[in-house]
Length: 117
Ligand code: HEC
View (tube, rainbow, N blue to C red):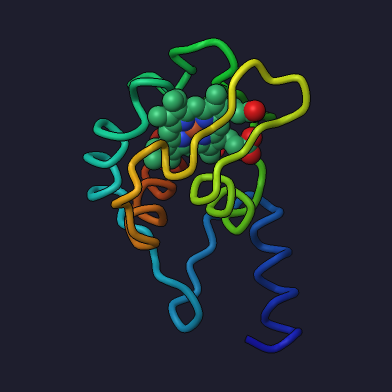
């Protein structure tokens, strides 16, 4: 990806679109992501996305974590993440080491489609 494409992707994602650039990335499949979410994510994030445990963010919140671009969220889902002062960390891949990069794109597509952001 050249600098111009990179810039455009950045702008589009900061405007809140789930950016799918076929040439450079794998598009997420929200349908497949649904199954992954219920198996690996819902225990902590809730089937309603509002956070089932203390510290888990509300995905449906308008100015919440889904404001971040895909690249940031994919990194945090893959490698884990703990924000300042949070009582609990997001475990890498939600604790399911068998998830592939495609699975993570799929689950993010599902989260965006279902909970907004
Ligand atoms: C063991 C509980 C647990 C599981 C399982 C889990 N999460 Fe999380 N997740 C958390 C917690 C707690 C946070 C908040 C971390 C913080 O802010 O310090 C979080 C944060 C997040 C965030 C927001 C990151 C940000 O930018 O603030 C996303 C997106 C996310 N999780 C997605 C997922 C996905 C997708 C899965 C399934 C593959 C998953 N989580 C599984 C506990 C979990």
